[in-house]
Image 1 (cartoon, one colour):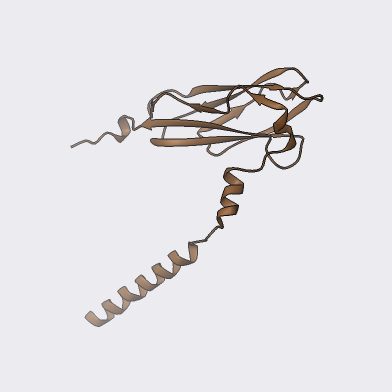
Image 2: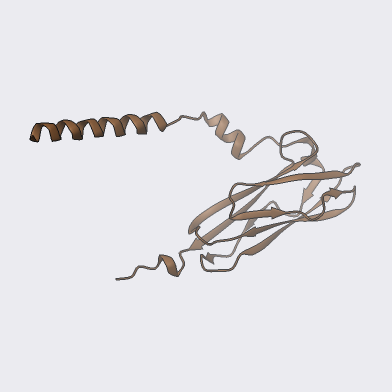
Length: 156
């Protein structure tokens, strides 16, 4: 009886190890870099942002969502269409009310950050895509330190 328990435990351990190792996928550094720091499209030269990186004041998980604004200008000779904004986390929702920015005009992209459920230090990115190719025209960064809320307090 004791022997069968040992065999059963070994079978479970081998199965768990095989399953865990089968789920590990090695991704080449170049691939990771191309996703986190992609080559920008040619529109990046004409979309001029006041800033592309905001470091927010420390927040608490219980804080209300906060908006961060990235202002940009079109310094080119043709209209630029903002087709989509892609965030690295659903906690940072980006919006741009102006979809087409004429030469010489300015517009804003607002990133609404919700700290609920996200304690720790984070850098969120928003990729700005225009009509120029499959690469983003800009990468906006938001760095934030979020402390745990009342739900994370230790109760003894």
